[in-house]
Image 1 (cartoon, rainbow, N blue to C red):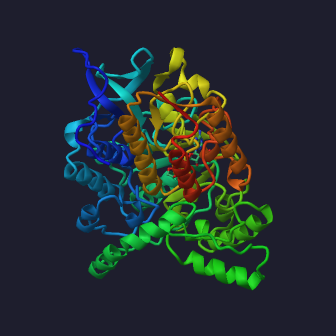
Image 2: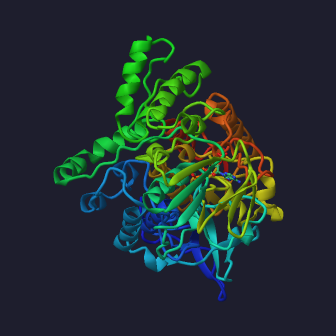
Length: 547
Ligand code: NA7
């Protein structure tokens, strides 16, 4: 139960501000965690690296940046007032609209006075004598807190390619996740994009509309599917608001926290005509309908996956005029849905335009970046603007960039050197009072983020309230609980084709050759994850030592 007289935090020291909880990050997770803890009466503060709130949606402001989740499944569900007040203009809104939403949320719940902006946390050290974390930001700002909750995002540590000559480029160069706040002029320019993941695909289709010449440097093609965006009119708003309870109820039951549920049939048991009819039906639906609403075995069985892949390949081929270009755009190294499926509106048609050229850098790798452009197989592509849509050090990257020191000064990064070891994807033995929202092995890493974030946040707040009620100052996962959770995550991962394919899902990143292939996600689905977390809480936080 919320209380207004919760403990303020560890004993004050005159030189450092002291809080019950210090949250790192003011994105979707951090904002809600701050609100929830404040509702519970705890003193809490956020250190946020950016100069504004919104996390991922603050940083990713490249042209075309847009939701791939339906806006009305991506919003917070915890406040009826907020649901009533806010109106989404489109089924899949743009980054700017989403960012306005987070700013509105921060204002509405009076969160700004509790957020330090421009405070990029560099270290967090656990003081065992007092059971307190000492947190420091790069600019020297410090805080002491009983608990640290990380809300640093799963895709927030961008990576740049390790290509010779990168620094020598004399034009403008930007990573999609570090796009400038000022408008970047692309009209009439010679633009190059390296990377064809979700960010690259969104960027490319916008850029192709205005660039004089767009050169796409593609390593691995992806199976991109139609987004099918649409405006939400007045009648749509009314219906949407009336259906929020049903929307959230349905999302809570599906594996990925979306409205799409896989079909219980096996693709292999259906006749070719039945399969085709089902796929055609799913293909006309928006978003991830075909990916996450497919036959139950297409992401587990190679034969079933090959059939679905054939269907998707046909759909892609139909949209590209030049068969040679089409061949290059069709993935050969993996089956449909085994990597994150980028969503698009005009992506394939872009390659029918005279101002767009596709350069296959898998066939002929980039030699180097030159002052004037990109050199591939001895051909120099001259550019005014070079865009790196080259992805992230996923899931563990943002945590690794903070020097976490737990019991006896142990470094989290070193502990996780061979892959993360966690209990419930929210805690790690040897790091008491440290809670990771959307951390590795957490249900939210393969989920429609806000749906699972709300579960994470509520569970963590309940744990802290329980500790406060009982007078506990320290919570730590046991080694045994951590071992069995980590093994459980590995076992679940072995059942899906997603972990057999190279992608950020399994920590494979061409720009981070030192990062080991590992299980980063919880693949049991959101409902099972929530059930496990609730079970642990119901058993008095089984698997934790509370002192
Ligand atoms: P992704 O999906 O990791 O995509 C990165 C892209 O950049 C991908 O096509 C990479 O090719 C390519 N890349 C990376 N480094 C290089 C080098 N050195 N040379 C050529 N090409 C390179 O990142 P996104 O930002 O698009 O999306 C991340 C997630 O954000 C997405 O899944 C959604 O969940 C939202 P590769 O595949 O490694 O061959």
